[in-house]
Image (cartoon, rainbow, N blue to C red; front, side, top):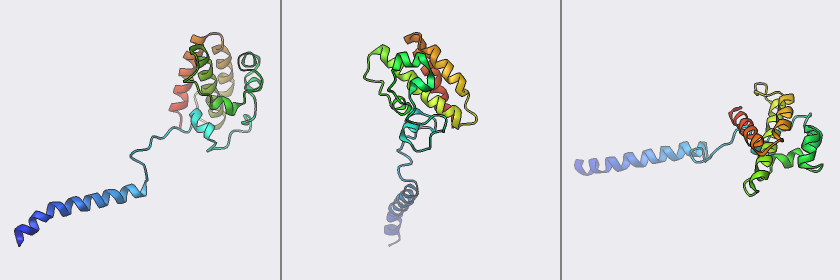
Length: 154
């Protein structure tokens, strides 16, 4: 009788451990398998989980916020919300660089207004975007810098 009880002991131990693991997972569903994005990325801002700063309403155009050089590149119709949701993976190489830089610059601008410790001021973001529009290489480099700042921010 005692040997039979000892043979069930490991089975009982694993069943208890599995039940405890399920209980821990039920308190935080998907915690182990979900990939969270930061509170400063373009994806976060385009999801509208947080109110946009008053200085940069979603319906404001990129041309109005960033100036005449942005008007030349992006036209008069692109809104900040559209810029934050630009799909850049399926475009040609040059357009991809300019699409990515406006996407990251929009998030950086929103972060400059909404996050106290963000490394760029609003004026710097606007100026750096205008400077980045001179070439595909400058746009690619600046979008990487904005992306790093956006992903590093809390």
